[in-house]
Image 1 (tube, one colour):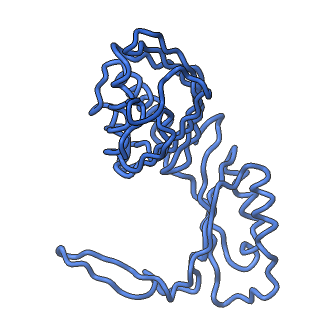
Image 2 (cartoon, rainbow, N blue to C red; image 1 turned 90 degrees about the vertical axis):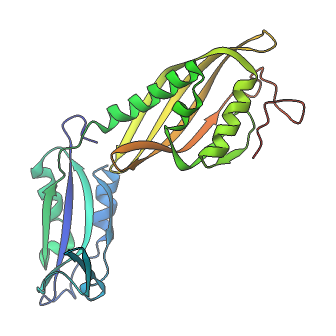
Length: 258
């Protein structure tokens, strides 16, 4: 996430078949140091070029060939993603990578990202609007088809968007009128195609018995970038033990079918 002037950089760690790497220092201390400093987000080794598969499409035909795209003594052996204050800081970190002494480390800045955090905040606002209007289609459009949700009313995990819809319909059946959802605190962390948010959410409504409902929950949400859209892939809601909402089955409608 490009905040506070930081940028993400990809380090392409390139080995050299002709170099003697027997005396190369282990990479673990380098990884541990940058991780401790909050600079290294993730990374991994890659299998040897001989295990690569190169794919081309020509005239609508898929052409597959075993091996790397180009025969060269240098090859990408792994990658690391760093978040740095400047290119100079990323270059300094790359220079300390053990492979830099026998091969090369290419430093490339990520393409400037769209407003991912803004998109996620708009997605959360969509949930608020959908609840106020009791619009289940609008709400479910915010979730991935294979979403996993720990539902606060049933205390059960809902697998998939259709199970979640049923749970929400049952939950709303004990309420009347609009459901006011107020986000008191919302913190987002975006990392490439996944993101997480932590929020305090206050919900106010009227039970069908006429009693008021006013409860605050802590909601942890995981998002996945699907194409050009962010969708909720996981959600866990923790509520106070005694919310005043009837929970149980079969008489109590607060227990959804799964």
